[in-house]
Image 1 (cartoon, rainbow, N blue to C red):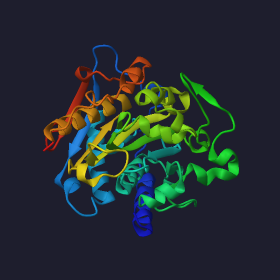
Image 2: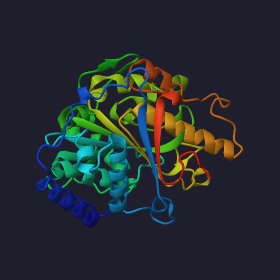
Image 3: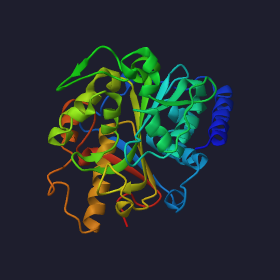
Image 4: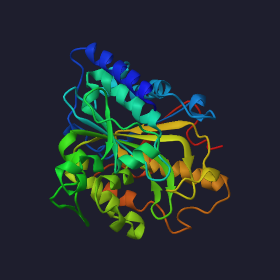
Length: 342
């Protein structure tokens, strides 16, 4: 994502914002309850050959088009702008949390999201793409931006002037965790998207939409016992995350089914997909199923057999964060069938 591409997409978002229709439906975070008993959580898996193509990966413009299609399917709206307006408002300050530790979220996914958000009148300068450190973002191919033109992009450490290395002075507790939170979350966002990447984790089994927010606290190294359970759920259950998290968008373009979170190309494959849902727990559950099917197809033992199932999903469901039961999740599959992992 070079400077020219980022500015071009920021300009596109500005144009969209200027022409946004009046009267779009907007929803506060409080209006995003977990599905009632008997009602299924919806997750969209969209796959396309342009995502699976070899080379540098898809352009941000193509990702944005597929995200628009996924958003319409998720919300049940005919227009993409109406769909995005269910989750974001023009007055929001949107934080797109990417994962740049080891195998990283592609910049095209974050850029596509930023442009899509512009379709409801959310100005580009009110969007920040972020992770723990600016160094990790830059190493993953992101262009750092701290100005007022276009979406910003920097790490929590970029806010060091505000104290505590960019983290709060106050310790926030939730369940079994006690942590300082990124001031990007506390001071600079009213809405969050977990723009994660689908990859195996050597302890938790999976690192996806929920575990992505270990990058929002100062001490994630303390929370990996028992496969991150209940700590992953506890971080996400804190109101700073829970009340702001609107969507999970998973980069499943080339998932990694073994050896994560480090980069292991020999265990990546061209799935060519994006997984989108307003229920981050359900998104993680679908991600687990995709990894499980791929591991089985590759003749590898299950995550349960390796004593690293995604235990935290049950805890997340118990805390009311979303749906972890597969039978209570409706998967809308667009393109190649979502369980075809070949």
